[in-house]
Image 1 (cartoon, rainbow, N blue to C red):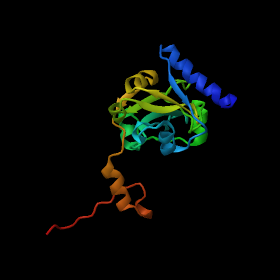
Image 2: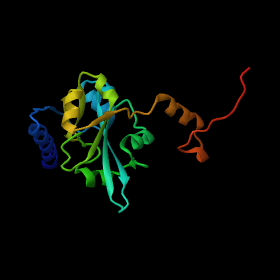
Image 3: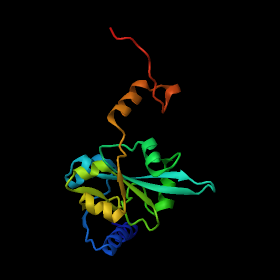
Image 4: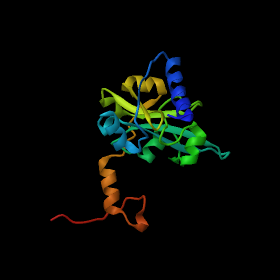
Length: 192
């Protein structure tokens, strides 16, 4: 790991230590990109890999309020549900530049805690179905292993359903078209 990555991992270790937790961190042979590579690197199921995704809500003064969503590698965040749960009218995914500016980490190294600023963290309830979870540890070549309860405590997360329901993704794919991008289309029909 280079010096920058070491400092990112060190911030995560220090954040956990402040709450009395010694982390189980695995330094990987090289950087991993995406859930599939991360799961393979640690010998876990993709559902055990925690995606730390940054969304933003825009304040009246134009400032961005970051929200970090912790979700299983098998799931996608349902944006409308996220907005409703946190009491915002609208949220959107943060750009790579916004993620770095708001958290101090890149998208590929973003840990679920130790972000160095007050950030709302929301954790999908599906993560609680696993005995162990794996998440980025402040570097794209280091991962930490943690139980769902300890992850919730370290990240000070609010636990709620966040995952897009499977039928939503299926309906979006079936109804996709240039004019229907991002909207569901329902057609009336008769049953014989």
